[in-house]
Length: 254
Ligand code: G
Ligand code: G
Ligand code: NA
Ligand code: MN
Image (cartoon, rainbow, N blue to C red; front, side, top):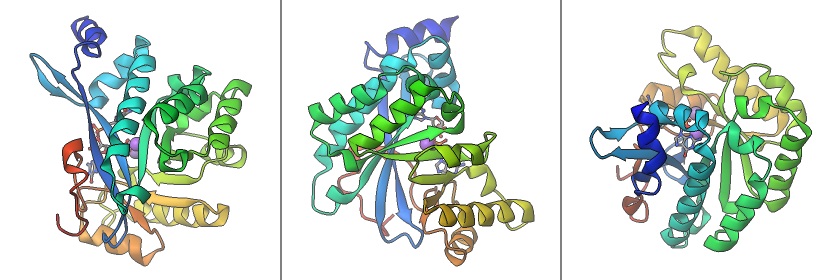
C-alpha cells in the first residue's frame, strides 16, 4: 500500500535521519555510548516512528539497503564527534534479524568501518533475540566474523524474546540490554523488579555488562544503582537528539 511505496523511495529522497540517545553510567556523570535511532520524515505525514515502518521495511526487504545506510551514516557522524572524551564513547547501531540472516553483514561492517575510519572497538551492534533465533551456521559465522573485527555485540530488548538463556550459552555477546518494559512501574510491580535483579545477577555470573533502558524516574535509577546495574539509558538522563547536538552534549547539564 501507500506506506510501502513511500518507504521504497524514502531512501533515495534522503528522508531518513538519525537521532542519538546517550547511554550513561547509572549515576549520570558519564556517557559510554550513543544509540543511533532512525527517524523518517515523510513529506506529507511528518515524522514517523521506527516501530511504524521498520517492520514494513523488513517485509519488503528494504531493511537491507536501509540498514546499510544507517551503519554508514552513523559511523561517518560518530567519527566527526571528535574530542578526547567523545573519542572513547561508543556508537550503538540497531541491526535487524534480516540483516544478520543476509550473510554478508560482517563484510558490510568491515567496509563501513574502513570507509568511515571509525575504530571497530567503538562500534556496538544491538541485536534482538529474534535476530539470534535463526541459529543457522551462517548466522553463527557472521557473529564470529563480527567478533573477529573487534565490534561489540549487545543483546537488545532482553527478556522479551524466548529461549534467551539458550542463546547466551552459544553466542558471544558482550552485553545485555534489559527491555524497557521491565522498568515500567517497578515500585508497584514486584515481578518486574525481581526480573531486573535476576538479569543483573545473570549478566554478572556470565561476565557480561548489563544496561537498563527506559529509565524515566529517580526511583528507577536508585533501584538500579542499589542493585549493581551500572549502565542506564532513558528519558531521565537524555532523550534522543539530532546528530548536531551530540558533539556539544555535556553529561549532567541536561
Ligand atoms: O526510537 P524508537 O523508540 O521509536 O525506536 C523504536 C524501535 O525501532 C526500537 O526497538 C529500535 O531498536 C528500533 N530501531 C530504531 N532505529 C533502528 C535502526 O536503525 N535499525 C533497526 N533495525 N531498528 C531500529
Ligand atoms: O528497542 P530499542 O531499545 O532500540 O528502543 C529504543 C527506543 O526507546 C527509542 O526509540 C527511544 O526513543 C525509546 N526510549 C528511550 N528512552 C526511553 C524512556 O525512558 N522511556 C520510553 N518510554 N522510551 C524510551
Ligand atoms: Na536498541
Ligand atoms: Mn531495546
